[in-house]
Length: 248
Ligand code: 13P
Image (cartoon, rainbow, N blue to C red; front, side, top):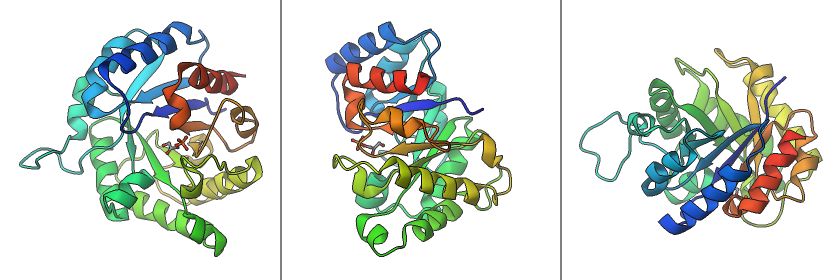
């Protein structure tokens, strides 16, 4: 039985005041028997978030990390720095990193290795564009992103995969539960062929316009083990409703 996991990816949103307000509400209302819950604010708000979540069931993670351990890499933040600060999680290979920062599969793989070596729990994101889905390439794209990130890794313990179809991110277009379930089952099949992974025990999250109103039907599907939530994670009531749906 895989424990459900709900992760809020706050992207480049927030201020010290809004972070305090959001986390005060989320922490205060977190159900006692909550599923796994984490929030991923921007780097500059991590320290504040870690303090506000201390002693609660809400873990904190980064939205990215460097592939390098340390050195003259201006603007970069290492996985070790995140772990040292008290982060438990890190998101790697988000489509917005791939799109706006030209992150290749090999860079994603290097980041994943660095994050694992630092002892972080890694969420690696995969997903096809609308054009790729319409031309029937969705599975091939996802399989290739998985191979690119996972092949040859020394350690994949506790890895979480997030399936985030690019066409569903921030668009209000959610993959239907059938579409998501089919791709999640496909991903689990791909994971079964990767050394060092127990595919049955690996959580596969869905991301892309997850809302309070559609979370329950997604979570009811066999291979959907939770969500990576963008916009709806910025509203305490919406995020808590999604957490509640994962608990049900
Ligand atoms: P939205 O929930 O805003 O579509 O974002 C999804 C996402 O990219 C989470 O990482």
